[in-house]
Image 1 (cartoon, rainbow, N blue to C red):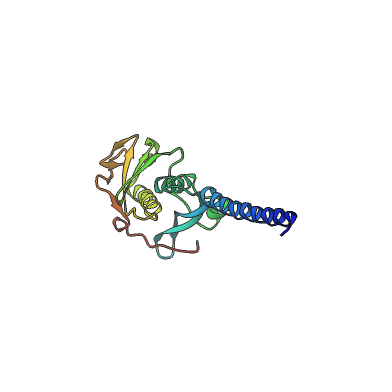
Image 2: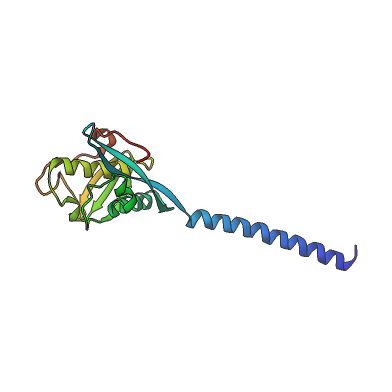
Length: 184
């Protein structure tokens, strides 16, 4: 083989290696920095049957570890419904101004640390709706099956300023009797 042919062959092989490595780098970057979706659970009241449904709505969240995914999903829940969702009859029990400070997962329990605004409002039904939305949204991420609430870093025994709802023990989906309605 002539010298020029070897240079061309080695050059093409080098180019092929660079292309293959670039493909894997780009693919990995997309996986790391891409987005995925999660369900945010809103409420829909059906007058005919006098039933409140939980309705999962897909929202884009960034990829990350389990705590980051739960935080992103709850942050989307706290944003509330958009105009189309409102027009479809969806609503939320989340109060304005509430924030999720941080999330910690231990075993199958997610510890959600909210600002004090999460307890604003009143009435047992409103608080139960709010808790159901939080629990269903957070427990879609395995291995999380239960949620424990904290307010400004402190575990709480009762939810809301009126002490209406006992939340001392971690709550799972089985603590709520809400039918799920798909398709808005």
